[in-house]
Image (cartoon, rainbow, N blue to C red; front, side, top):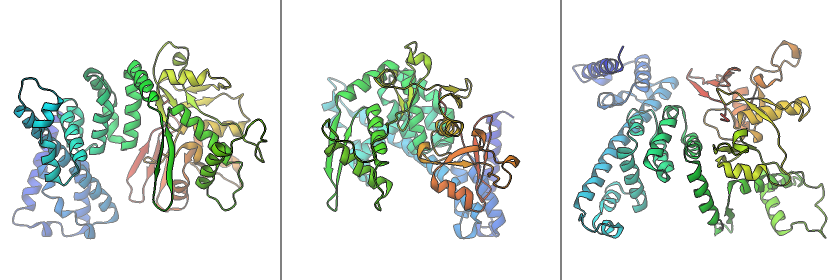
Length: 462
């Protein structure tokens, strides 16, 4: 069935149902009974939002829905919120266009615009926003209307959130229009299945891939702006840190974690030990005349995954810095050829980009399996969790059989996945949550107690 015809039929059906609900039988009479309410919630959750569907949202009363129905209602309301935000963006873009028509055409510059364009102030007052927030909303609206209509369409269909749409405009702001269009096209089909954080990461990678020279130039410019940051917080505390290249930050984090592991617990949490380790390294750092602290310091490890053709300079595609995300080819080569660097071979699937094998000569079998799974998954495999894999538990998807290990639940990469402690406990002890992993694609599928399913795809190293 042609898409347009299917949409017309769906809209007509929804309109007829709406007319029925607004007819002689009132909403309360139609929605008598939780079963029918749940069915309606499921329908709205799967239907593109619009004025017809919005008019019947009042039937989704929380107190009369089942737990499953409430999840569907939540999804339906979120889709409609996105649809409303798309309409609001259209209004904001039109307001911005109105302002431009009133600016004198001769000798226009930024000062002229500032003297004539008060749209930001009007929006800020009308919506009770700060000037900065109003200006940002106007900028996103203008870009969605003029540069990213496909992203705006996904927002209007309730397929993505406003924060995702804003992420597209913000990330691509540094690109030329034709390159920005290329990046949008590359990520568009992935966005409906992603969180905002995942959206930003995939955008960062595609931007480096589409504009490697520009990415390197921007990195060098930001590198020249590196600085210390230090400002007070409440209760006698302070924030202390630095804005610096990602590879240096990764090396420093690894060094802090390594040193923190040598400190006695003494009732301290891991985060407290990391802060104490940082202070010790900076203030009480070892010198040639000062012996190493008791217990010594293990070597810090920074993991950069880089294709061979990038490593040897044939291409400038992005590499992946563990704990940060995409970095430029220049950064990756700088790390790879630094003094003391150890190279380890990783093999990825040419089609899916999933890590499928590690060098069997690097570690003993159990250590190799752990390293493989951590490198393969990159993060906790719960769909919305960003906990780095090296800080997660390795969990058996099919439970390990302690009585007869050969009967199932083998300790193999295909039957292992990385889960943060919270999601590990949820999978193991919470009734109704279940996890399956497709060994071919690497996709994990979670089933909630309500029967809803959510998928998480493996890290793509391409």
